[in-house]
Length: 299
Picture 1 (cartoon, rainbow, N blue to C red):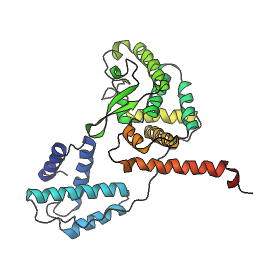
Picture 2: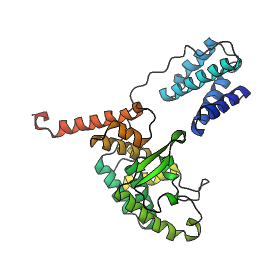
Picture 3: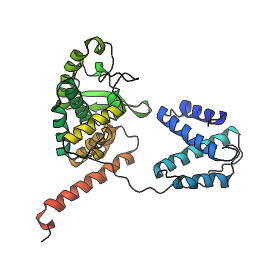
């Protein structure tokens, strides 16, 4: 349920804070949930009611991350309401953030990435070339799946060594392409143009499809990866488009890349977001020592 106050808040977030459509949609759902659950809605609820609503989120099975986002949405809404003079108090002021354990991202080994590429390459025709290009691009550049699927074909026509990517918040960054990724893209371009000559010329997308947006969807890409994982004898539950981005970051750090460089390549605004990969890399390196060092073996 939306109200004029919620709509005004979301408009402020869009105009003044340049919030992404994804953030606005999530905050809209969060505030609608609170508006429906609270007697009298957000504008009439007192501190006890807001705290009771928030305490019940965990009992409803919401994850700590979702609880934290709802807390943020409500607290920001009430600060906005205070500033607008709609309320004289902030009933969310005592809401504590839920405790969250460290959630390490899933990551694939180099061997598993190579097996995925081999499985994709084994597919016949344009479908195989497209999947190879998708995996190579994701793994070579660390692109978010939304950034990857929204690539325009003209961006790669001249075989660039880097792509200019517009990420979260409209920020631009350079994404590198290695020789393997560039060869995969060139092979896919030939197949793309030949397979759909009447449509490919009209489509601005590198990976056109019949979807509403005109390009391949994240869901379809995930389905293709699942099948490739099965063919490569890799657990499909450990494979997704985003996992390829995780592998890009983790393998760079394992190879000795500087954390700040990885932060820039991933497009993270806060280096704390990038630091999670140091834990993954350290854990994997420690496992190698335990498995391979002669003094670490059990007698």
